[in-house]
Length: 553
Image 1 (cartoon, rainbow, N blue to C red):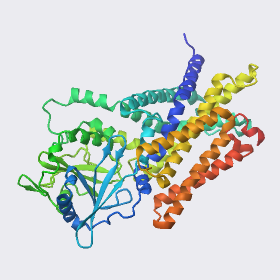
Image 2 (image 1 turned 30 degrees about the horizontal axis):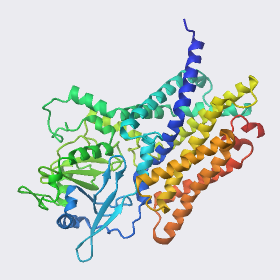
Image 3 (image 1 turned 90 degrees about the vertical axis):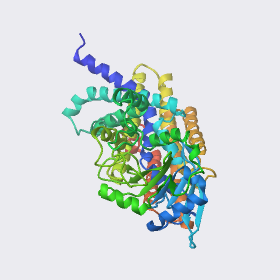
Image 4 (image 1 turned 180 degrees about the horizontal axis):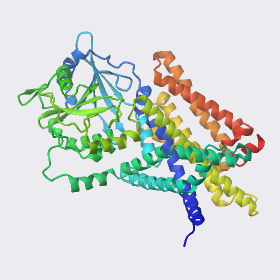
């Protein structure tokens, strides 16, 4: 019979080893996930807006749409109208010429009207760096495709969940006795242990949610297949039936990626729709103007505030998805809630993605992706999730540092004067991977501002992995422990280039936006803090050397 102390010891070993194995991957996922919370603003921040068509008045959107469809038949394959253009969608009308499910939209045409009322267009590649950071987050730093990336992510998410459960079993009794105890006078390792435990306990609901939703993302396709086989009748309704019985609820896991994949699959059979359709006619039906469409939508959903309309071709002409933000509830996409509307009658065809009108099943599926990506509460939700992700990064870094400090102490007690091979390898990986990830992400941000062709996904990917492997090589040559202050300075140097270049850029031809200002201030403060820690003495060494940090304090 296994006694309670033996059970606790078993779970302690499980927590340590599972945490070590998954911690490096999870650090990359969480660090990249911090910026993924702001993917759309990042895309607008990196985009060059010079020369793009100016927005047109709302009452002229129909004129712009009709003229653009006549002069540019390629727009008939799908386009968007924006009521409230912003930095990431700067013009009133656009259509994408190149799109990848993983890389996101590429070459895009932005359209507007000049002073004479003629259509004015400009082609530009949308920055794909934010999309790369998102995929880095989703695939935990591994350069894998979708077929391999998601299962691997699912395995790491399972290990993550196991580490959470074992950590609760091990630490809950001691935490209950001394919830807010910070033993700063008993050595750096003890202080790190207390802080690691305290932050882990208070952020436990967040981590459980992330682990569960990550498992959902990883296995969404088999879950969707099982749902269709078990719960959706073979003769069951169209894709946008009036009761919202269309695409399966599990597509809420994927948000915009799921919709993009659907569009790609539909696109295989819609080539006949390009270039041979009348501008405003489908059979004997005429497209409603955006004003008429919004007015009719308001009668059916008064609480919904539309900001954009996406037009997608089908056999009958077009189908329309109206998009609008709602900070009071969780939404399926970063752009907000969505409602499919008949573009010829203005009638809502499905309530499944309309805020406050969803069924319980679709709301649950929406919540999975919505909470994971901070799609609730507007900016408050995104900032909250970003801060919690940063706390998660500290937990993984401190967990590895505690394990290494403990292993070195045992090695010295056993008579070893230097680190054993396993300790050396993990030390190199911990320093190189974690600081390499930080330096690589900062390098991608810098590249998006100054590097030629850095708007392309492949360029951002090459920049990240080049910097990442350089940092890993430095850790390998110098040793994990000795390389930490130097890697901190490398991260600080690359990161501080972001505000420096950004200020120079805006001083020449742009105006500051709140997001850009916030990003620059955060990067500046983070860089200065890293420099202080890398050169610090006493308590500041706690961050990079838990075995000796407070001994010099």
